[in-house]
Image (cartoon, rainbow, N blue to C red):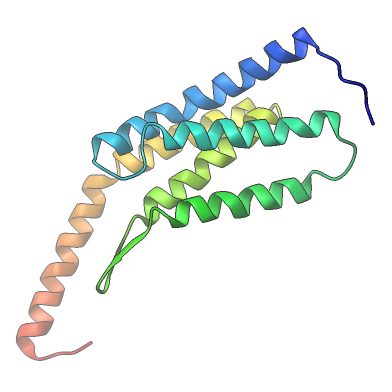
Length: 157
């Protein structure tokens, strides 16, 4: 058993990394909250900072971190699954669930010192969740037009 010790330098390093992970996912959480999603400004930062914290524990542990990463990915998938809602034949929340997964990847990237990866993931996540909404609406409208024509013609595809 290792004796308890306290390292102020490590504390500030951990604080810095967790804050970076928290800040990087805050825009996604803000956007999600603004859109009225059930997952938002609290959940995204919590997922990122927890992922960062779990991965930083590897600094003092000898062994293979891939098992921790696997567990983290699975756990975040479970949290994201809670954001998916089925209403008849319609399923909503899959993009939010994927975004929660991205928040975990951002936190893990920060913990492993790959800030570049975390920044790219954060920027692309915000872009995908925000800027691609008009594209999705356009595609949904096109699909509704095709479905409407199919119903009128008796086609059951």
